[in-house]
Amino acid sequence: MARKSCSICLSPITNEEAPVLTMGAYGTPKLLCDECAAEIENMTRGTDYDSIVASMDEISHRMSESNVDDRVTMTAVTEMLVDSAKRAQAIREGTYDFSLDELEEEDYEIPEDMKETEEDRLLDEKERESNQRLDKFMNWVWLGVLIGVVGFLVWWLFF
Image 1: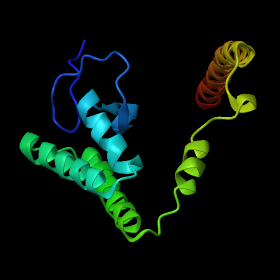
Image 2: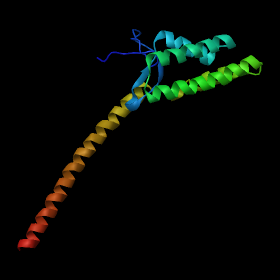
Image 3: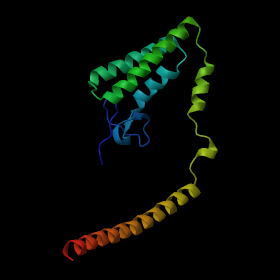
Image 4: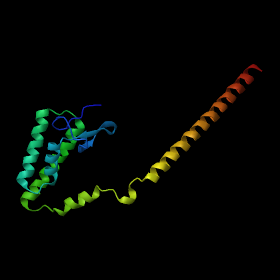
């Protein structure tokens, strides 16, 4: 089993259900340690300007200390830092609408009727088995056609 480490500070992850920063190549999750996850949470959802700026500084410091060279992680964190800076500035000016945070949270929830059920998984399994049988049958059909064509060519060339 591969050792899990935080995508930002590269410290070992002990949490079995570590938060995911983003998904990398081949669907590999970029995980976060609890400390970095807390800083990211405060940075993106905090309500106090000074606290948000402190979290942004801490995340930037951790990334520079660990010398992260993963492009996916760098892109994700950079986007978060830019968005957090804009958000913090709006909070400082008193123009930020905190109801937007609630709307964003609702966007990430999957409606109950769209979640995969056990019936869906069983139907997918039956469909996969049916497709495998059809593929096997079609392979035999094409093999028969190929033998027929080769037989015809041999007959035509030699007789």
